[in-house]
Image 1 (tube, rainbow over the protein chains, first blue to last red):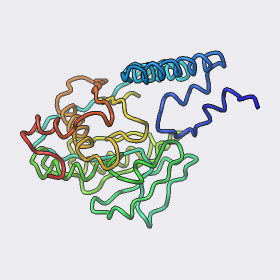
Image 2 (cartoon, rainbow over the protein chains, first blue to last red):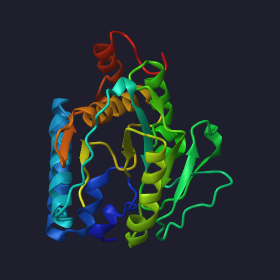
Image 3 (spheres, each protein chain N blue to C red):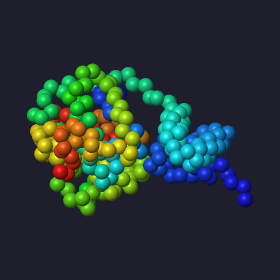
Length: 207
Length: 73
């Protein structure tokens, strides 16, 4: 039976090996070339014990392929708020776009949702839930800190690097085809809450 | 609209702070983000870190930074 070239790359969109998944959007001769090169470098790596050439190839191919399928987006405006405090005297918040919510809260609509969830910092690990179908969620399902590093922030506070945390973390679900409500309402609302709490800085784990 | 500050890591999608169950890695990344937050001086500052996903000794990086302190210690 003949093998269809594209059957070799029928990996799910959420495959953790990231940029290489876009290979399936490239012309067939490029896919052939990729597999030929992959085979050759694998054989060479096996013979020499030096796998770094394969690693370098995959890294460079990932960058090259993704730059071809997704041209860089141009931005006309970059907001800015200077960070004025010392870190050790600052209040920091952690946010994420990873679709995290807590058992009992309404799940995000994975077809597009600009709402947010307030995530209590003392949420027991077994009560975190994820509603997001546009990235590989197996990592965050195992450990919330992979996308929302709330426990790491608590350790950093304990060690005196940062003074305190916001009362809660905040979570969005990053698949938002129409971001107008996000811009006009929900993102502004979270910003207002953080401002009212006098948060000095925010770290967002993007997915 | 662009981000005012961005930290770029060559990690697999969906694990911005690091691998699940690797608190040292997650902490290194969070500390880098905070350092950037406090040291950036201009909008659109994008910095990248060279970490090689699982092939980095993050405990050693933390030890070098803090003299022996590591996540969960």
